Image (cartoon, rainbow, N blue to C red):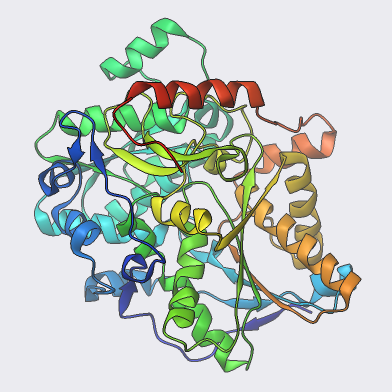
Length: 459
């Protein structure tokens, strides 16, 4: 029997930013043109004013506007579930919990950030948000958020996902969004890349270049992002804050926190509040943080901690992060949300300081875990979420071997109901592992480090 834990808790009233509590100073964002620390005006040209301010304000707690909390109330608080059937299937002494973010209207945690960005855009008078998406979870979530607050929405979606996940496109368009395959003929960036490779699968970094170009060309538009930036990750901390309250209600607290990692939004949204507990000495125990990534784009396990662009055409500022290089083209895999070249600077700093344990799996391993979870717990997870489930199963098996009665909490960050074709491919035996070529990663990283010889690229 699956036990859902829903104590009478309220939707959080503040977002938490980890920046003041990091173990070291976050490396500055660099403007590659001036070769200096990027000024605040650059962020305001790219993003909504209030979110740009959040990025550099160094606030620890940011009030959540009442209008955003009212929108959150459509699906929040989300359930905390004790996965007893999974525990039984694994014969593990571990207690396994998951935060079920699949219940949002768009089916993933991404709605937490999307609603906030759409609200601040509407408040500023911005007419349109332009964004990039890979698997489409962020794109559909932003379409939903924009529909609530009456803001236009343009989405550049990596072509491999645009072709392979048509239902996400349909859902976004039902909410009034305009969605284009990337690379597209809409932008100069897209046309240039199509000339070089007319049948390329696209990447998140290419889609981001297109979104940046599109937003810069419209005074009434701003770029919107679903991960990487501090203001995005902070808006996801409603997940971890609720989880702390829900676990307290059942007199438990995690030994291990697990999330899948692309840019880092769902994992950070879960663990940041628990990390704050540790910094404030409120947590009852030390927690192990495990980030699960795809071997198709193994930033944390095979990348380097260096300055890199967020987009393929180098129009963004430079961020210090774990990256495999902005021009690296990962193998086409079904976990498009993990098929990105770099992870959030905050997450990267914590990884560099040894606070996070990275693990990498191929998509066959992940789909095996996701299929098992669906069979015993009844929820089909998104391909990205399946990587977190694989890491959870591995930890639970270790507990069986050692006899440790650990409490494991992971973020079930999205459902896979729009990914049935991917599961069909797995079940038919036609799916490949989707591992990245190490030589291609080395070449990509060498190119990044050669671009700016004046930058200190030491780890």
